[in-house]
Image (cartoon, rainbow, N blue to C red; front, side, top):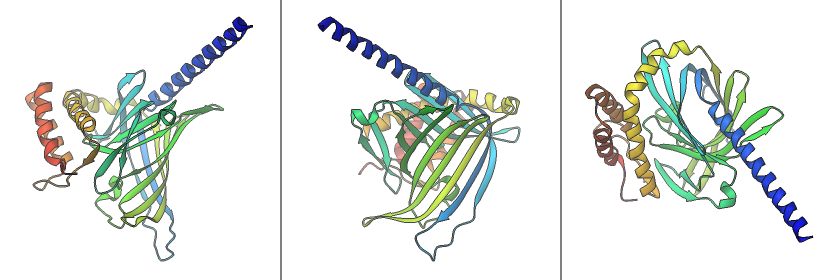
Length: 307
């Protein structure tokens, strides 16, 4: 009888292990599918406010071509760098997303360019992926956790987290200071969709107050790879520098439980200076150590240390 029970337990353990591995493989395949060459449309519209006197802001629509380059593909971490292509000879290093499996910490946005590190319980992280989204200069933007679901031929992931104002409103509005993101990513026959149900929050010492709700769609549709020939050459020259910048930021994230960033220093934002440094690095063919040294000095100048 004991042997029989042992065999049942062993078979159950093997079956569970195989299922978990199969699920992980499906998750990884779905995340890797986010990479590629796309035409992207951006559509946002405010939908509701608890204040009847509030007037919805105009709808936002834009589009562009974007290369989502898979920079790292390890068993439990996938890094995708987005590059925005403008015309035939202009590229902007866009946002980056790191997908980390069963990550034990989250960097949570508070307000006023401040993020605070939180710890997840093992049960909260088990089987789930953290999506870490970074600004164009690889500084923090937001992190959130969710489970990839694969059912009925559909593949999707969803989460909720707080973030700074979106780039489309950051320089135009000051009537709210936190965007609570309801993120939903799902694969489509021709690419993928980033659907959002957002809340625009006024955060103060007295708590959070909802200003307005917003619906958002960022649709990534596969397109002709030939449009990205210039971008490939440009990124090949820039990539070593930005790898060094990421390593500097990794040190910052590892050494600090609270990260607070300054706005302009001597009239310039951090991303402007890092972009200038990237061009200089490519032109002068800096090695990795030189890039790290210069980037570290620059980033340290924008970190608020007395928090």
